[in-house]
Amino acid sequence: MIYSGKKAEIALKNMKNVAQGSAVAITPTTAVTNCHVLVEGDFYVAKIDGTLRFFQLTYDDKDRDLCLINTEEPVLTPIKEFRRYTTLNIGEKVFTIGSPSGLGTL
Image (tube, rainbow, N blue to C red):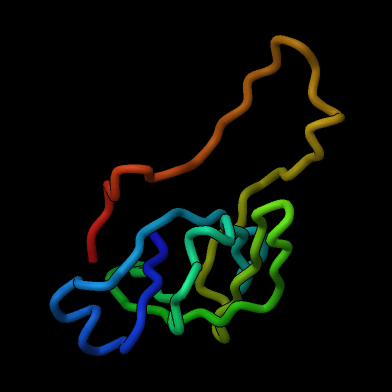
């Protein structure tokens, strides 16, 4: 679960002015998420193994709504396979990840 907000300490303490969304780890330090999850935030944090980890925005493609966020330490477990949708076959199982109702909490 990725949290985006303003004034990190205050926002995380009372969970006001905080947005939530999901991200997918693609390397041990990089995750991909939707840019709309990060809109207007000046910090990005995820709880990983009980520890809050801060992330920085390193790439944004707002036209495709794709953003990359990075953390300094290699604490993420990347997905095993990441393919372009053009390589998928009809009837093949695919999975999407999201949290439209804010299912996770700090």
